[in-house]
Amino acid sequence: MTLDFAAFVAEATADPAVVGLVLKGSQAHDGMTTRHSDHDLYVILADGPTSELAVLNGYRSARLDLVVTTLEQFRRPADWERYAIARSRVLLDRRDGEVARIVAAMGRLGAEEAFQAGATLLDAYANSLYRSVKNHRDGNPLAGHLDAATSVGFLLDLLFALDRRPRPYNKYLAWELDRFPLPGWESAELLDTVARITATGEVALQQRLFARVEAAARVAGHAAVLDAWGEDLLLMRPHPDVPGHRPI
Image (tube, rainbow, N blue to C red; front, side, top):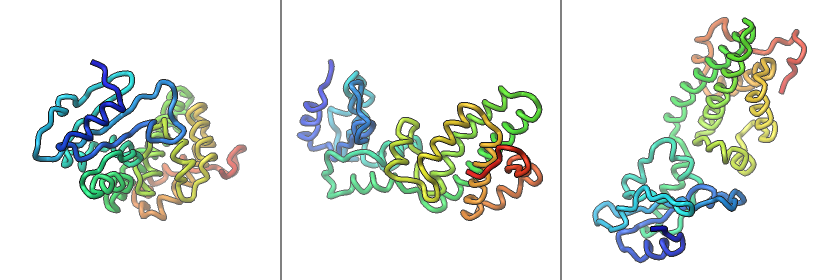
């Protein structure tokens, strides 16, 4: 059985147990659809009544993927789902805007949640950066390059956490930064920098980027995380006397 998106939406809308329909993925991101794009849909059921649609949870086809969930479960998604929900499109909301409010809330991390995540991510970013620079120094460029690539993931998670936002999936990173830039960062420059680090593992570029991240992290209250690295910070920071260590 292959379900048609429009027909399924009409059927779900007619089901009184369905309190919300939320479209996520490329169809909810203007300009991101291709001829291969399907429709990713959350079907949200009331917490009490049952619906025959519940058996379709996990349905996948070339044109339609379904997540059938309850309203209570929709309020508490896995962390990896938060960005998808935050940038989703509400097609049906039978709860006087409650579904839309849940969607909007997913795009904003709580202050304490963001702070704790930021501390953990900063330490992980610093660790990968440190390993990358040390491996390059010790004549192991492959390890240094791989560590540099690893550091970029932690870096992006960190920068979005500092702005109390879930990090977008890689597919939507440029889309997100074009429309919702990170404060203090020029989007095109940031994207170019992480692309170059991922492609080359260039040490001087990593160190220049770290200088900016360190300053932002200290302003955000994470000095203790950085200071715990002690003299190892000297390896991560730019060396002004070395060619190529110009600010970014």
